[in-house]
Image (tube, rainbow, N blue to C red; front, side, top):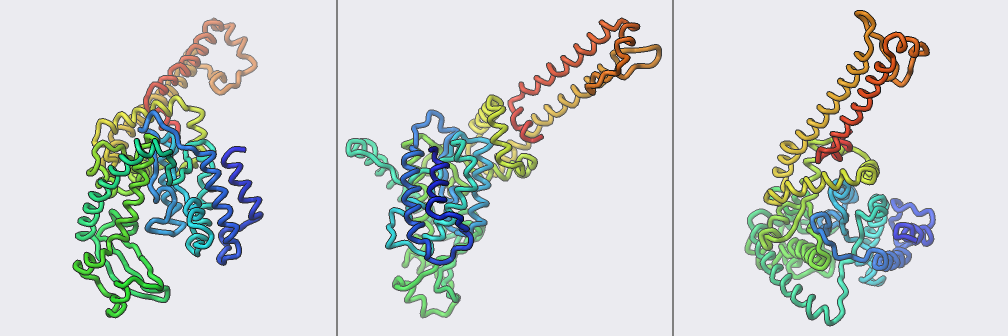
Length: 448
């Protein structure tokens, strides 16, 4: 039984005919926890991370692109991020490792199962079904966050890497704090749901939607007790932000996310895949040698310049990859080669210029050649046989030969005439093979 079959079997066996969207109580919590345990162990068995030879096309995705609710738990927002993941996976990646909620649910234990655990479980199952075609193909794989090492390998590999990552975390914390202090404000307020902090970024670069709401419930931290005495909404001063270290609630999430990617990229030779330009810029600033890719910028360029591909069903793209695998490899190598010659920042401007100035002209060249060949084919067939000042339209082109064609050809050197038509018809197919010689033939096929 393969991984997808096993997960479907686990779900159907434990919760037959389950409608996930209608569950709003704790009736199934114990079952959800047991399923999370089974899925986590199944992932350990089936999706063992491998050491990859080419990190250009193998990636570890960040939490957001994995469907996680790091800053926004909305299912719609998660699905939107998976759309970016799927676009990138279908048109560029060999394999993308993504995280899942089931491991944390399992490791926290059933005694800590909460409303949030239930939400994460339900979203995790919904997202699994959405990604199922890609998981079946092995293009997307689940990976557990933890990495297991024996003592010898922990001493020789784990400890040096841990020290390196901790050093980077300190630098990253300083960079993020410096950025947030100048680009983000914090307001304390309350509503019927409880007391909360509103983090508001001047421009959406680091925080999705440029806002993040963090709710607090009893027992409250000391600083919340003090803020509750303020008239709300209360804009927290810079000094108070520093005093209470309030940006830790943003920074720690980002650092945890980046650290997990760093562990996996080092052990399994994968590149970073993110959806956040500011985050990638900071990572690149810390380590100029790190390999990164921005799925959001890739999707934006695809949507703007190749909307036919952007809106095409993902399964159709996967089927085309299988049929035209060699053409896919050629196109992808060409695209990677172009990016290697650039700054490799994968920003919006860079990828838009690539699609506009290098990919679209190549697709237009293929279209022009194919249209010319079709026109020549029609002309050659039409002009192959002349009778006086007129011509005979032969049904060979349309696949229908008139019954008297033999008599006509016999009268007008038929062997030579039919030979010329067949040669022209055959040459038209030979000419079409020229399209294969273009490095972007795969995209041209996907764009049809």
